[in-house]
Length: 202
Length: 95
Image (cartoon, rainbow over all chains, first blue to last red):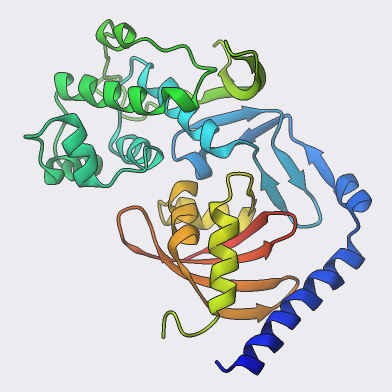
């Protein structure tokens, strides 16, 4: 693209923005936004997650915005790791992605001897994860994500004490309960106020 | 050819996507596609942070078609409307 073409394309982008701003002023935009009492955030997070309040629906655009999405995903992952129900393959994959790890990176974080292929087989459920490996995985995930999830209480001992059950043995149709999170404001030890996602008591 | 077209658009996209203040808005169509393709918001955001604008479309919004990759390096296309001044990205679809 030559200089003139590039300038034209930039101008067209700017023109588009002005046109949109003319149609939808800030006041009107606010009126179109509506806070959802409950929003199923599973497609965004990859884990069964329900957000109470805070998710904003724009009815004109048909879009949803969830504030602090990174922190929401981290809180959901930590909460799921503290749930004493065996992790399914798709959940292992979702937690890994929330950690922003590749297969090799997660394998390395767990144990030098764990192969990326093994993690891949856990994710596809071609191989069952052993109880010990699952606890290590939960521990690694919680340690990596707890800083972004200050609203979910976590201590390493909570993982050690977990008695993980496998409800799919008795009921193959069993569904993992949704993790319900609400947005709260927390005061840090430093005195600063932060937004966090807190797990709602079942 | 990646890198020769829409250079300034790619720079704007990556800058906005990498901004910690960036707000992402997700269409319901995009969410349906993400469930169908088993991709998450982290994958889409990764593709936007590292991807390239390949096409500009004039629809209801000005849409940029982005070629990128998910966290595992699998090819992922995303269609977005970027509002640079509001630091907002509307994710229209993922494919």
